[in-house]
Image 1 (cartoon, helix red, strand yellow):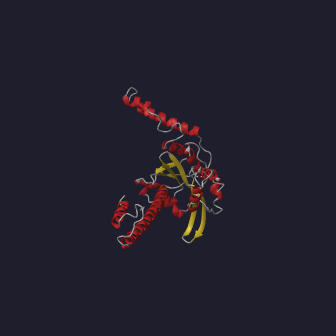
Image 2 (cartoon, one colour):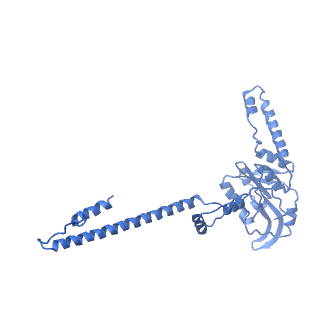
Image 3 (cartoon, one colour):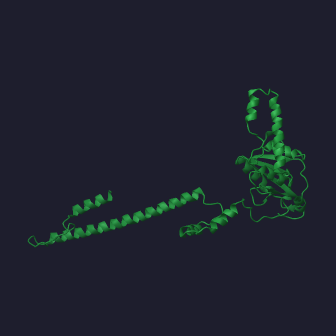
Length: 315
């Protein structure tokens, strides 16, 4: 893997990283790509001027910012396409009707450029390996050279079509790179050795965030949660948070139910005591002397106690 050239993300220069990872070297800089973008802007201005420099369309065009680059370091597909023309390479939209009619298996291509919103990255074949397997002869290995990853991600031939289909479902535009790519060290080295990848490379910042969270002081509750739900570097998902809150709510309900059950037992006990005292007083002779002081509970009848219990549980 060390022989594979892989630029990591800096700022918004993903178009530069995409091109250099595709060509496997530091072939383009922001200055060179800016020069291509300015040339495209000038060509567009000259075409608009053909309709008259005093026209409303031309004046509006001059007031608009460039569509080929911006201050953040973003470059358009036109800039990428013109940069590749220097190497005799051409871009074709992968899901266009023209390309789909060709019926080409993706594993027979050499590389792809993928774009979502303002992020570009390369998927490229490296190392024309030829070795026998159960299915026949397997050629090459594919690598996801996304600059947002810590390193290249190995993609098998069987997974490539599924990987591209998943990107399309997520809204990516995919371009097939046509033409002969320049020779590179990784391509030559990977012809002689097999490559295996035990673990997928992490996203940039993912490992740093995990280390930072591990250094932060944690409460006993946080540690208990971590034991039951090990932190995987991606943070707690919304669904996990909802389940956690639901569990807390159920726990509170159980506590409330236990309190109500305790109150119910006390009320029943008082009721039974009052009932026994009422029966005892009724069994006494009519001329028996009453105690000088009687409590309010002792003076209540069974019907009064029943009504009080009913009023308590209707609260």
